Image (tube, rainbow, N blue to C red; front, side):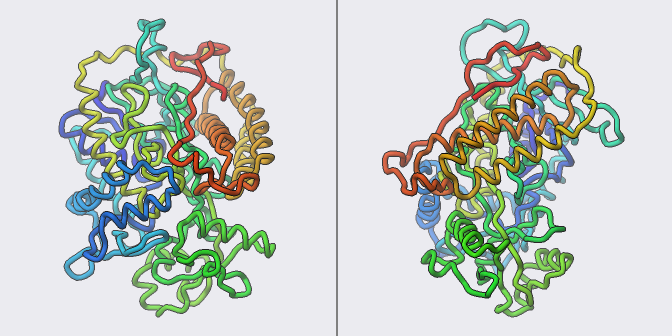
Length: 554
């Protein structure tokens, strides 16, 4: 597939759903940086929020979403997503997703911030069930090709093509420079090539790996946000990083999340002496919105000097717990915990980016030919804090509209231009990787210590200075060294970390997930006002290595 109509970067629910719809009219190439199944979708335990219960209503779901969003949601987007939810869930079920049923209808769970049971789920690993079905469907489709171990490095811009430099008008994206990492499995070299398409879709997921502790898989390095910003697209509300309240605290556990559905079924939070603390924190106790619960846990840990709190569901019948949470129960047994008998140690961890590339619900960005979907995008649905299980909902609704938008943009008939090959002349392999490893750890430690659940002006200023120095070092390596997967991802997390800090410093108030010690109250004048960043005009790179842009500053 030399020239697909649509190039999809990412293989989660948003990218694969869009690919299936676009294949009805065009050729689709899906590139994923590791295996197709390695997506944040595959890790999602809870489910998809949608109104199916007669005692629930669209108005209630909208109200819960707006309340969590703390004055920054786009009301029109919220209404559209909520009202289309049941139809999109029905389409997934028709594709073969085995949602858990109760009697003649779908079984519905409840999670934090929801006023009713409306979380459609497939046991307790909903994302895995969805991902398996979608991956199987795209692999079998004759007009879709999936390539694994393909890491996008930068977008191909119209203004950087030889025949179009110096032109005027709106910038356009024609695909991406892509690193083929398949050979690196056996110690071989990587190869970077241009992949062109009429429409390019960023569905690369979030950026949890920017933080030292995260519930996200290793792929979540903010690649789409970083590439879009370097290309000149607007990014929005990156200060709103959601920390999931309950990740397993265990030295052998890596990013294991304990679903909010546990609290929806009655699990409670306790300090190490067994005392509950959420009832005195919020009227909804353990079912308060995630930002409230994460801050309460963080406060108790700091106040008492304890490394974690406890999640306790031992008061419920053991059989009921095992039947509702079979996968979580089995996983915890491997770590030495019986969910039915033992309170489980938990801590908050970086979980979800509520901001992203500024986009419409259909994924349209400020750059022609570029769409952004799912966690990569900021559509206005989540505002300052995402309501639980609205993420998969947004992804599948946005993908439906994005497929129509991709068709409109692809039909405009412009000929896809020839892109310059990637230039490696003058670069050399790194002599050692110890500096990369150090900078990886330093970026993530800076973000965790200084830009975490609670922030201050002093911490953010220090983080900005430290990240600026790190980015300068990383950009020098990017210019002079032969690129590797680690260096490309390090460059991206350092940029995204800097963007998070820049957005946080601009919002001098506390709102939703952004909690500032120096500005403890929300400013009514900031309600409805997003934080928007755009890259400065591109300066000539120190040494031209490709037709796409190099590093940019803030």
